[in-house]
Image (cartoon, rainbow, N blue to C red):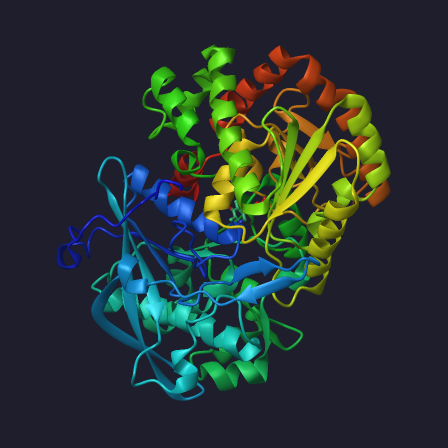
Length: 570
Ligand SMILES: *Cc1c(COP(=O)(O)O)cnc(C)c1O
Protein backbone atom coordinates (compact mmCIF):
# COMPACT_ATOMS: atom_id res chain seq x y z
CA UNK A 1 0.00 0.00 0.00
CA UNK A 2 2.72 2.42 0.98
CA UNK A 3 6.06 2.48 -0.73
CA UNK A 4 8.70 0.90 1.47
CA UNK A 5 11.28 3.35 2.53
CA UNK A 6 14.90 2.39 3.10
CA UNK A 7 14.97 -1.14 1.79
CA UNK A 8 18.07 -3.20 2.31
CA UNK A 9 20.75 -2.35 -0.17
CA UNK A 10 22.76 -5.52 -0.51
CA UNK A 11 25.95 -6.15 1.31
CA UNK A 12 28.14 -3.40 0.01
CA UNK A 13 28.95 -2.29 3.54
CA UNK A 14 32.39 -3.64 4.26
CA UNK A 15 32.81 -4.20 7.96
CA UNK A 16 36.51 -4.75 7.70
CA UNK A 17 37.46 -1.41 6.28
CA UNK A 18 34.82 0.70 8.00
CA UNK A 19 36.35 0.73 11.47
CA UNK A 20 37.97 4.11 11.04
CA UNK A 21 34.90 5.61 9.51
CA UNK A 22 32.49 5.46 12.41
CA UNK A 23 32.92 8.42 14.69
CA UNK A 24 29.49 8.63 16.29
CA UNK A 25 27.68 5.76 18.01
CA UNK A 26 24.00 6.56 18.51
CA UNK A 27 22.35 4.47 21.23
CA UNK A 28 18.60 4.16 21.51
CA UNK A 29 16.36 1.58 23.17
CA UNK A 30 14.05 1.82 20.16
CA UNK A 31 14.75 2.76 16.56
CA UNK A 32 11.87 3.00 14.06
CA UNK A 33 13.30 2.82 10.56
CA UNK A 34 10.51 1.45 8.41
CA UNK A 35 7.03 -0.02 8.78
CA UNK A 36 8.24 -3.63 8.39
CA UNK A 37 10.61 -3.41 11.35
CA UNK A 38 8.32 -2.94 14.37
CA UNK A 39 11.05 -2.20 16.92
CA UNK A 40 9.59 1.08 18.17
CA UNK A 41 6.70 2.20 20.34
CA UNK A 42 6.38 5.90 19.59
CA UNK A 43 8.04 9.27 19.19
CA UNK A 44 11.41 8.34 20.70
CA UNK A 45 11.97 5.48 18.28
CA UNK A 46 10.73 7.38 15.24
CA UNK A 47 13.04 10.25 16.11
CA UNK A 48 15.95 7.80 16.34
CA UNK A 49 15.13 6.31 12.93
CA UNK A 50 14.80 9.74 11.35
CA UNK A 51 18.12 10.75 12.90
CA UNK A 52 19.86 7.73 11.32
CA UNK A 53 18.42 8.73 7.93
CA UNK A 54 19.65 12.29 8.28
CA UNK A 55 23.10 11.09 9.37
CA UNK A 56 23.20 9.30 6.03
CA UNK A 57 21.88 12.31 4.06
CA UNK A 58 24.62 14.46 5.55
CA UNK A 59 27.38 11.81 5.30
CA UNK A 60 27.94 11.82 9.06
CA UNK A 61 30.07 8.77 9.91
CA UNK A 62 27.67 7.33 12.47
CA UNK A 63 26.19 3.99 13.51
CA UNK A 64 23.04 3.18 15.46
CA UNK A 65 22.91 0.70 18.34
CA UNK A 66 19.62 -0.71 19.61
CA UNK A 67 17.93 -3.91 20.82
CA UNK A 68 16.44 -6.40 18.42
CA UNK A 69 13.00 -6.43 20.10
CA UNK A 70 12.14 -9.42 17.91
CA UNK A 71 8.57 -9.50 19.19
CA UNK A 72 8.22 -5.82 18.44
CA UNK A 73 5.95 -3.75 20.66
CA UNK A 74 2.51 -5.30 20.03
CA UNK A 75 -0.22 -5.42 17.42
CA UNK A 76 -3.26 -3.48 18.55
CA UNK A 77 -6.75 -4.81 17.97
CA UNK A 78 -9.82 -3.17 19.41
CA UNK A 79 -13.10 -4.93 20.10
CA UNK A 80 -16.56 -3.38 19.59
CA UNK A 81 -16.59 -1.93 23.08
CA UNK A 82 -13.28 -0.20 22.59
CA UNK A 83 -11.18 -2.65 24.60
CA UNK A 84 -7.60 -2.80 23.41
CA UNK A 85 -6.37 -6.31 22.66
CA UNK A 86 -2.63 -6.77 22.48
CA UNK A 87 -1.48 -9.40 20.01
CA UNK A 88 2.12 -10.53 19.72
CA UNK A 89 4.01 -9.71 16.55
CA UNK A 90 6.87 -11.60 15.10
CA UNK A 91 8.78 -9.87 12.42
CA UNK A 92 10.86 -11.94 10.00
CA UNK A 93 14.19 -10.70 11.29
CA UNK A 94 16.41 -12.36 8.71
CA UNK A 95 14.36 -10.86 5.89
CA UNK A 96 15.34 -7.34 6.88
CA UNK A 97 18.53 -7.72 8.87
CA UNK A 98 21.80 -9.57 8.33
CA UNK A 99 23.32 -11.63 11.13
CA UNK A 100 26.95 -10.78 11.94
CA UNK A 101 29.53 -13.26 13.18
CA UNK A 102 30.75 -11.06 16.05
CA UNK A 103 29.93 -12.07 19.64
CA UNK A 104 30.34 -10.32 22.95
CA UNK A 105 28.91 -10.77 26.43
CA UNK A 106 27.86 -8.98 29.60
CA UNK A 107 27.46 -10.07 33.21
CA UNK A 108 23.97 -10.08 34.64
CA UNK A 109 23.57 -11.38 38.20
CA UNK A 110 26.97 -13.03 37.78
CA UNK A 111 25.83 -14.93 34.72
CA UNK A 112 27.60 -14.45 31.45
CA UNK A 113 25.02 -13.42 28.87
CA UNK A 114 26.15 -13.78 25.28
CA UNK A 115 25.17 -11.18 22.71
CA UNK A 116 25.18 -11.18 18.93
CA UNK A 117 24.19 -8.44 16.48
CA UNK A 118 22.10 -8.03 13.36
CA UNK A 119 22.96 -5.42 10.78
CA UNK A 120 20.64 -3.01 9.01
CA UNK A 121 22.07 -0.58 6.52
CA UNK A 122 20.41 2.66 5.68
CA UNK A 123 21.64 4.08 2.41
CA UNK A 124 20.95 7.71 1.54
CA UNK A 125 20.26 9.20 -1.88
CA UNK A 126 23.95 9.97 -2.24
CA UNK A 127 24.81 6.36 -1.37
CA UNK A 128 26.18 7.02 2.08
CA UNK A 129 25.52 4.08 4.38
CA UNK A 130 24.76 4.30 8.07
CA UNK A 131 24.69 0.89 9.78
CA UNK A 132 22.38 0.06 12.67
CA UNK A 133 23.29 -2.80 14.99
CA UNK A 134 20.42 -4.68 16.61
CA UNK A 135 21.64 -6.52 19.72
CA UNK A 136 20.25 -10.00 20.29
CA UNK A 137 20.57 -12.40 23.25
CA UNK A 138 18.47 -15.17 21.72
CA UNK A 139 21.44 -17.51 21.48
CA UNK A 140 21.46 -21.20 22.40
CA UNK A 141 24.20 -20.88 25.02
CA UNK A 142 22.06 -18.47 27.06
CA UNK A 143 19.48 -19.50 29.65
CA UNK A 144 15.79 -19.35 28.80
CA UNK A 145 15.40 -16.07 30.70
CA UNK A 146 18.42 -14.49 29.06
CA UNK A 147 17.30 -15.51 25.60
CA UNK A 148 14.23 -13.34 26.07
CA UNK A 149 16.01 -10.16 27.17
CA UNK A 150 15.91 -8.61 23.71
CA UNK A 151 12.47 -9.92 22.82
CA UNK A 152 9.90 -7.41 24.09
CA UNK A 153 10.15 -3.66 23.81
CA UNK A 154 9.16 -2.08 27.15
CA UNK A 155 7.82 -5.40 28.41
CA UNK A 156 8.38 -7.12 31.73
CA UNK A 157 9.30 -5.89 35.19
CA UNK A 158 12.14 -3.80 36.66
CA UNK A 159 14.54 -6.70 36.48
CA UNK A 160 13.79 -7.29 32.82
CA UNK A 161 14.20 -3.58 32.08
CA UNK A 162 17.56 -3.37 33.85
CA UNK A 163 18.76 -6.50 32.06
CA UNK A 164 17.83 -4.82 28.77
CA UNK A 165 19.69 -1.67 29.73
CA UNK A 166 22.79 -3.71 30.60
CA UNK A 167 22.67 -5.35 27.18
CA UNK A 168 22.05 -2.06 25.37
CA UNK A 169 24.59 0.11 27.22
CA UNK A 170 27.40 -2.20 28.28
CA UNK A 171 26.77 -4.79 25.59
CA UNK A 172 26.49 -2.09 22.93
CA UNK A 173 29.84 -0.50 23.74
CA UNK A 174 31.50 -3.93 23.81
CA UNK A 175 29.88 -5.03 20.58
CA UNK A 176 31.16 -1.96 18.71
CA UNK A 177 34.66 -2.85 19.87
CA UNK A 178 34.16 -6.43 18.81
CA UNK A 179 33.07 -5.22 15.37
CA UNK A 180 36.33 -3.36 15.02
CA UNK A 181 35.18 0.13 15.94
CA UNK A 182 37.84 0.92 18.52
CA UNK A 183 38.10 4.64 18.15
CA UNK A 184 34.70 6.19 18.42
CA UNK A 185 34.69 9.92 19.09
CA UNK A 186 31.23 10.23 20.62
CA UNK A 187 28.74 7.95 22.26
CA UNK A 188 25.35 9.58 21.98
CA UNK A 189 22.79 8.32 24.48
CA UNK A 190 19.30 8.98 23.16
CA UNK A 191 17.48 9.04 26.52
CA UNK A 192 18.89 7.40 29.68
CA UNK A 193 18.28 3.75 28.71
CA UNK A 194 21.84 3.36 27.41
CA UNK A 195 23.51 5.21 30.30
CA UNK A 196 25.27 2.06 31.58
CA UNK A 197 27.42 2.31 28.46
CA UNK A 198 29.22 5.19 30.20
CA UNK A 199 30.19 2.80 33.02
CA UNK A 200 31.68 0.41 30.49
CA UNK A 201 33.67 3.26 28.96
CA UNK A 202 34.81 4.26 32.45
CA UNK A 203 36.06 0.78 33.16
CA UNK A 204 37.95 0.85 29.85
CA UNK A 205 39.36 4.37 30.08
CA UNK A 206 39.63 4.69 33.89
CA UNK A 207 39.34 8.44 33.73
CA UNK A 208 36.13 10.41 34.30
CA UNK A 209 37.20 13.32 32.10
CA UNK A 210 38.08 11.03 29.22
CA UNK A 211 34.67 9.40 29.40
CA UNK A 212 33.03 12.81 29.55
CA UNK A 213 34.92 13.87 26.47
CA UNK A 214 33.15 11.11 24.59
CA UNK A 215 29.61 11.11 25.90
CA UNK A 216 26.64 13.13 24.67
CA UNK A 217 23.24 12.79 26.32
CA UNK A 218 19.79 13.78 25.09
CA UNK A 219 17.05 13.79 27.72
CA UNK A 220 13.44 13.44 26.59
CA UNK A 221 11.32 13.40 29.70
CA UNK A 222 9.97 16.48 31.48
CA UNK A 223 8.53 14.54 34.45
CA UNK A 224 10.54 13.03 37.29
CA UNK A 225 8.60 9.75 37.23
CA UNK A 226 9.61 9.20 33.63
CA UNK A 227 13.28 8.77 34.51
CA UNK A 228 14.50 5.21 34.96
CA UNK A 229 15.78 4.38 38.43
CA UNK A 230 16.63 1.20 40.28
CA UNK A 231 17.20 0.37 43.97
CA UNK A 232 20.91 0.45 44.52
CA UNK A 233 21.27 -2.95 46.15
CA UNK A 234 19.18 -4.50 43.39
CA UNK A 235 21.21 -2.70 40.72
CA UNK A 236 24.45 -3.91 42.35
CA UNK A 237 23.25 -7.49 42.35
CA UNK A 238 22.38 -7.21 38.66
CA UNK A 239 25.34 -5.24 37.38
CA UNK A 240 28.15 -6.34 39.66
CA UNK A 241 31.42 -4.51 40.24
CA UNK A 242 31.26 -2.33 37.16
CA UNK A 243 29.36 0.10 39.39
CA UNK A 244 32.14 2.20 40.97
CA UNK A 245 31.77 3.14 44.66
CA UNK A 246 33.66 6.40 44.23
CA UNK A 247 30.98 8.12 42.15
CA UNK A 248 27.88 6.57 43.70
CA UNK A 249 26.87 9.86 45.26
CA UNK A 250 26.76 11.53 41.88
CA UNK A 251 24.64 8.96 40.12
CA UNK A 252 22.14 7.98 42.79
CA UNK A 253 19.17 9.68 44.34
CA UNK A 254 17.41 8.38 47.46
CA UNK A 255 19.55 5.28 47.37
CA UNK A 256 18.53 4.56 43.83
CA UNK A 257 20.64 4.38 40.72
CA UNK A 258 19.23 7.09 38.48
CA UNK A 259 19.92 6.59 34.78
CA UNK A 260 19.43 10.25 33.97
CA UNK A 261 21.92 11.29 36.66
CA UNK A 262 24.35 8.66 35.43
CA UNK A 263 24.13 9.98 31.89
CA UNK A 264 24.35 13.60 33.07
CA UNK A 265 27.43 12.87 35.17
CA UNK A 266 29.38 11.28 32.35
CA UNK A 267 28.42 13.60 29.48
CA UNK A 268 30.24 16.72 28.36
CA UNK A 269 27.20 17.79 26.40
CA UNK A 270 23.56 17.44 27.41
CA UNK A 271 20.47 18.73 25.66
CA UNK A 272 16.70 18.81 25.86
CA UNK A 273 14.57 18.38 22.75
CA UNK A 274 12.87 21.80 22.56
CA UNK A 275 13.63 25.17 24.14
CA UNK A 276 10.91 24.89 26.77
CA UNK A 277 11.84 21.30 27.58
CA UNK A 278 15.46 22.32 28.15
CA UNK A 279 14.32 25.02 30.57
CA UNK A 280 12.27 22.45 32.50
CA UNK A 281 15.18 20.01 32.50
CA UNK A 282 17.48 22.67 33.94
CA UNK A 283 15.14 23.17 36.89
CA UNK A 284 14.82 19.39 37.33
CA UNK A 285 18.58 18.89 37.31
CA UNK A 286 20.16 22.04 38.72
CA UNK A 287 23.93 22.28 38.43
CA UNK A 288 24.15 20.85 34.92
CA UNK A 289 24.51 22.78 31.72
CA UNK A 290 21.62 21.67 29.54
CA UNK A 291 21.53 23.00 26.01
CA UNK A 292 18.63 22.76 23.60
CA UNK A 293 18.33 21.18 20.17
CA UNK A 294 14.76 21.06 18.96
CA UNK A 295 13.66 17.76 17.40
CA UNK A 296 12.85 17.31 13.76
CA UNK A 297 11.55 14.74 11.31
CA UNK A 298 13.09 13.21 8.21
CA UNK A 299 11.25 15.15 5.53
CA UNK A 300 11.73 12.79 2.58
CA UNK A 301 10.30 9.96 4.68
CA UNK A 302 7.26 11.91 5.86
CA UNK A 303 6.24 14.00 2.85
CA UNK A 304 3.56 12.08 0.95
CA UNK A 305 4.08 11.07 -2.66
CA UNK A 306 2.03 13.91 -4.15
CA UNK A 307 3.98 16.46 -2.10
CA UNK A 308 7.31 14.87 -2.93
CA UNK A 309 6.45 15.17 -6.60
CA UNK A 310 5.28 18.73 -6.14
CA UNK A 311 8.52 19.66 -4.34
CA UNK A 312 10.60 17.90 -7.02
CA UNK A 313 8.92 20.02 -9.69
CA UNK A 314 9.28 23.28 -7.80
CA UNK A 315 12.28 23.06 -5.50
CA UNK A 316 14.90 20.65 -6.73
CA UNK A 317 17.50 19.70 -4.14
CA UNK A 318 15.00 19.80 -1.25
CA UNK A 319 15.53 16.12 -0.42
CA UNK A 320 19.09 16.59 0.76
CA UNK A 321 18.75 20.24 1.74
CA UNK A 322 15.28 20.83 3.22
CA UNK A 323 16.09 24.53 3.83
CA UNK A 324 15.16 24.87 0.18
CA UNK A 325 11.53 24.32 1.19
CA UNK A 326 11.32 27.98 2.24
CA UNK A 327 10.78 28.62 -1.45
CA UNK A 328 7.39 26.93 -1.07
CA UNK A 329 5.97 30.46 -0.90
CA UNK A 330 6.24 30.63 -4.67
CA UNK A 331 4.28 27.42 -5.35
CA UNK A 332 0.88 27.72 -7.00
CA UNK A 333 -2.04 27.33 -4.64
CA UNK A 334 -3.94 25.10 -7.08
CA UNK A 335 -1.08 22.63 -7.16
CA UNK A 336 -0.88 22.51 -3.38
CA UNK A 337 -4.59 21.85 -3.10
CA UNK A 338 -4.42 19.17 -5.75
CA UNK A 339 -1.58 17.38 -3.94
CA UNK A 340 -3.48 17.66 -0.66
CA UNK A 341 -6.64 16.23 -2.17
CA UNK A 342 -4.68 13.27 -3.54
CA UNK A 343 -3.34 12.56 -0.06
CA UNK A 344 -6.76 13.12 1.50
CA UNK A 345 -8.43 10.69 -0.91
CA UNK A 346 -5.93 8.06 0.06
CA UNK A 347 -6.73 8.54 3.75
CA UNK A 348 -10.49 8.59 3.21
CA UNK A 349 -10.31 5.41 1.12
CA UNK A 350 -8.20 3.83 3.81
CA UNK A 351 -10.60 4.60 6.68
CA UNK A 352 -13.60 3.61 4.59
CA UNK A 353 -12.02 0.30 3.62
CA UNK A 354 -10.49 -0.67 6.95
CA UNK A 355 -12.90 0.92 9.46
CA UNK A 356 -16.05 1.27 7.42
CA UNK A 357 -15.95 4.94 8.39
CA UNK A 358 -18.23 6.29 5.67
CA UNK A 359 -16.16 9.46 5.29
CA UNK A 360 -15.79 11.72 2.26
CA UNK A 361 -13.11 13.95 0.80
CA UNK A 362 -15.01 17.23 0.96
CA UNK A 363 -15.65 17.52 4.68
CA UNK A 364 -13.30 19.16 7.12
CA UNK A 365 -11.15 16.42 8.66
CA UNK A 366 -9.23 16.52 11.94
CA UNK A 367 -6.53 14.00 12.86
CA UNK A 368 -5.30 12.99 16.30
CA UNK A 369 -2.81 10.13 16.57
CA UNK A 370 -0.09 9.34 19.06
CA UNK A 371 0.52 7.11 22.06
CA UNK A 372 -2.70 7.07 24.08
CA UNK A 373 -1.63 8.47 27.37
CA UNK A 374 -3.39 10.63 29.89
CA UNK A 375 -1.37 13.83 29.57
CA UNK A 376 -2.02 14.05 25.83
CA UNK A 377 -5.77 14.30 26.56
CA UNK A 378 -7.02 12.37 23.50
CA UNK A 379 -10.68 13.00 24.37
CA UNK A 380 -10.50 16.75 24.91
CA UNK A 381 -11.95 17.36 21.45
CA UNK A 382 -14.95 15.11 22.04
CA UNK A 383 -15.43 15.81 25.74
CA UNK A 384 -18.46 18.03 25.07
CA UNK A 385 -20.26 16.17 22.25
CA UNK A 386 -23.25 18.52 22.25
CA UNK A 387 -21.12 21.56 21.73
CA UNK A 388 -19.17 19.80 19.00
CA UNK A 389 -22.39 18.80 17.23
CA UNK A 390 -23.61 22.36 17.53
CA UNK A 391 -20.41 23.71 15.97
CA UNK A 392 -20.70 21.25 13.09
CA UNK A 393 -24.28 22.38 12.58
CA UNK A 394 -23.24 25.99 12.24
CA UNK A 395 -19.78 25.87 10.69
CA UNK A 396 -20.01 22.72 8.58
CA UNK A 397 -19.48 18.97 8.84
CA UNK A 398 -16.54 17.58 10.85
CA UNK A 399 -14.78 14.23 10.42
CA UNK A 400 -12.43 13.12 13.20
CA UNK A 401 -9.86 10.38 12.76
CA UNK A 402 -8.10 8.89 15.77
CA UNK A 403 -5.31 6.35 16.19
CA UNK A 404 -2.83 5.33 18.87
CA UNK A 405 -1.74 2.47 21.09
CA UNK A 406 -1.93 2.52 24.89
CA UNK A 407 0.96 0.82 26.71
CA UNK A 408 -0.35 -2.56 28.00
CA UNK A 409 -0.01 -1.36 31.62
CA UNK A 410 -1.51 2.06 31.03
CA UNK A 411 -5.05 1.82 32.31
CA UNK A 412 -5.81 5.50 31.67
CA UNK A 413 -4.75 5.25 28.05
CA UNK A 414 -7.00 2.23 27.50
CA UNK A 415 -9.92 4.06 29.09
CA UNK A 416 -9.39 6.90 26.62
CA UNK A 417 -9.74 4.50 23.72
CA UNK A 418 -12.98 3.20 25.21
CA UNK A 419 -14.36 6.70 25.56
CA UNK A 420 -13.50 7.46 21.95
CA UNK A 421 -15.38 4.32 20.90
CA UNK A 422 -18.30 5.38 23.04
CA UNK A 423 -18.32 8.77 21.32
CA UNK A 424 -18.18 7.07 17.92
CA UNK A 425 -21.44 5.35 18.71
CA UNK A 426 -23.27 8.24 20.34
CA UNK A 427 -22.17 11.36 18.49
CA UNK A 428 -24.86 12.71 16.22
CA UNK A 429 -25.49 15.38 13.65
CA UNK A 430 -22.76 16.54 11.37
CA UNK A 431 -19.88 14.88 13.21
CA UNK A 432 -18.36 11.54 12.37
CA UNK A 433 -15.58 9.85 14.29
CA UNK A 434 -13.41 6.86 13.51
CA UNK A 435 -10.48 5.11 15.16
CA UNK A 436 -7.81 3.34 13.09
CA UNK A 437 -6.35 0.43 15.08
CA UNK A 438 -2.67 -0.42 15.29
CA UNK A 439 -1.09 2.99 14.77
CA UNK A 440 2.32 2.60 13.16
CA UNK A 441 4.63 4.34 10.69
CA UNK A 442 2.49 3.38 7.71
CA UNK A 443 -0.74 4.69 9.23
CA UNK A 444 1.05 7.78 10.50
CA UNK A 445 2.18 8.59 6.96
CA UNK A 446 -1.35 8.33 5.61
CA UNK A 447 -2.85 10.34 8.44
CA UNK A 448 -0.45 13.27 8.76
CA UNK A 449 -0.73 13.97 5.04
CA UNK A 450 -4.42 13.22 4.55
CA UNK A 451 -6.20 15.28 7.22
CA UNK A 452 -6.95 19.00 6.97
CA UNK A 453 -5.97 19.83 10.53
CA UNK A 454 -3.58 18.11 12.94
CA UNK A 455 -4.66 18.29 16.56
CA UNK A 456 -2.52 17.96 19.67
CA UNK A 457 -3.70 18.64 23.21
CA UNK A 458 -0.89 17.83 25.68
CA UNK A 459 -1.21 19.08 29.21
CA UNK A 460 1.60 21.58 29.72
CA UNK A 461 4.48 21.20 30.37
CA UNK A 462 4.43 17.45 29.75
CA UNK A 463 5.19 17.29 26.03
CA UNK A 464 8.98 17.36 25.67
CA UNK A 465 8.77 18.10 21.97
CA UNK A 466 6.16 16.20 19.96
CA UNK A 467 6.95 15.51 16.33
CA UNK A 468 3.80 14.41 14.54
CA UNK A 469 2.80 18.05 13.97
CA UNK A 470 6.08 18.50 12.10
CA UNK A 471 5.16 15.58 9.85
CA UNK A 472 1.85 17.29 9.15
CA UNK A 473 3.58 20.63 8.43
CA UNK A 474 5.76 19.24 5.65
CA UNK A 475 2.54 18.03 4.02
CA UNK A 476 1.02 21.48 4.28
CA UNK A 477 -1.27 20.51 7.16
CA UNK A 478 -1.57 23.19 9.88
CA UNK A 479 -1.47 22.17 13.53
CA UNK A 480 -3.87 23.17 16.30
CA UNK A 481 -2.23 22.54 19.66
CA UNK A 482 -1.57 23.66 23.21
CA UNK A 483 1.60 25.69 23.45
CA UNK A 484 3.98 23.05 24.66
CA UNK A 485 7.11 21.37 23.28
CA UNK A 486 8.05 22.34 19.74
CA UNK A 487 4.78 24.21 19.16
CA UNK A 488 5.99 27.11 21.30
CA UNK A 489 8.60 27.59 18.57
CA UNK A 490 6.56 26.53 15.55
CA UNK A 491 3.21 28.24 16.10
CA UNK A 492 2.69 31.51 14.30
CA UNK A 493 -0.96 32.16 14.95
CA UNK A 494 -3.10 32.06 11.81
CA UNK A 495 0.00 31.47 9.67
CA UNK A 496 1.33 27.99 10.55
CA UNK A 497 -1.62 26.94 12.70
CA UNK A 498 -3.33 27.88 15.94
CA UNK A 499 -2.72 27.65 19.67
CA UNK A 500 -5.03 26.20 22.30
CA UNK A 501 -5.17 27.87 25.71
CA UNK A 502 -3.04 30.58 27.22
CA UNK A 503 0.01 31.85 25.40
CA UNK A 504 2.52 31.98 28.20
CA UNK A 505 3.30 29.93 31.26
CA UNK A 506 3.11 33.16 33.25
CA UNK A 507 -0.58 33.39 32.54
CA UNK A 508 -1.12 29.85 33.75
CA UNK A 509 1.65 27.36 34.37
CA UNK A 510 -0.31 24.13 34.12
CA UNK A 511 -3.14 23.35 31.77
CA UNK A 512 -6.73 23.72 32.87
CA UNK A 513 -8.98 21.32 30.94
CA UNK A 514 -11.96 23.67 30.99
CA UNK A 515 -10.02 26.68 29.75
CA UNK A 516 -8.40 24.64 26.99
CA UNK A 517 -11.63 22.93 25.93
CA UNK A 518 -13.38 26.25 25.65
CA UNK A 519 -10.64 27.78 23.58
CA UNK A 520 -10.46 24.70 21.36
CA UNK A 521 -14.18 24.81 20.52
CA UNK A 522 -14.20 28.57 20.25
CA UNK A 523 -11.41 28.73 17.71
CA UNK A 524 -12.76 25.81 15.72
CA UNK A 525 -16.11 27.52 15.42
CA UNK A 526 -15.08 31.13 14.89
CA UNK A 527 -11.75 30.94 13.09
CA UNK A 528 -10.62 27.58 11.79
CA UNK A 529 -13.71 26.06 10.22
CA UNK A 530 -14.95 29.28 8.59
CA UNK A 531 -11.53 29.67 7.03
CA UNK A 532 -11.60 26.11 5.71
CA UNK A 533 -15.12 26.27 4.33
CA UNK A 534 -15.45 29.90 3.26
CA UNK A 535 -11.97 31.30 2.71
CA UNK A 536 -10.20 28.48 0.89
CA UNK A 537 -7.66 30.78 -0.71
CA UNK A 538 -6.30 31.87 2.63
CA UNK A 539 -6.51 28.34 3.93
CA UNK A 540 -4.16 27.20 1.16
CA UNK A 541 -1.90 30.18 1.87
CA UNK A 542 -1.55 28.79 5.39
CA UNK A 543 -0.76 25.35 4.01
CA UNK A 544 2.04 26.93 2.03
CA UNK A 545 3.39 28.71 5.12
CA UNK A 546 3.48 25.42 7.00
CA UNK A 547 5.82 23.96 4.40
CA UNK A 548 7.93 27.08 3.93
CA UNK A 549 8.28 28.09 7.57
CA UNK A 550 8.04 24.86 9.56
CA UNK A 551 8.92 22.17 6.99
CA UNK A 552 12.15 23.94 6.12
CA UNK A 553 13.24 24.10 9.76
CA UNK A 554 11.70 21.34 11.91
CA UNK A 555 13.52 18.49 10.21
CA UNK A 556 16.26 16.10 11.29
CA UNK A 557 18.72 17.39 8.69
CA UNK A 558 18.79 20.74 10.51
CA UNK A 559 18.75 18.91 13.86
CA UNK A 560 21.70 16.65 12.98
CA UNK A 561 23.69 19.66 11.81
CA UNK A 562 23.15 21.19 15.25
CA UNK A 563 24.28 17.98 16.95
CA UNK A 564 27.39 17.90 14.79
CA UNK A 565 28.26 21.55 15.46
CA UNK A 566 27.22 21.88 19.09
CA UNK A 567 27.55 18.42 20.56
CA UNK A 568 29.88 16.17 18.59
CA UNK A 569 32.64 18.33 17.19
CA UNK A 570 32.59 21.57 19.10
C1 LIG B 1 5.52 10.51 14.91
C2 LIG B 1 5.00 9.31 15.57
C3 LIG B 1 4.79 9.31 16.95
C4 LIG B 1 5.06 10.52 17.81
O1 LIG B 1 3.98 11.43 17.74
P1 LIG B 1 3.85 12.63 18.79
O2 LIG B 1 2.77 13.48 18.29
O3 LIG B 1 5.17 13.30 18.79
O4 LIG B 1 3.54 12.02 20.10
C5 LIG B 1 4.29 8.15 17.54
N1 LIG B 1 4.01 7.06 16.80
C6 LIG B 1 4.19 7.03 15.46
C7 LIG B 1 3.87 5.78 14.70
C8 LIG B 1 4.69 8.16 14.80
O5 LIG B 1 4.88 8.12 13.47
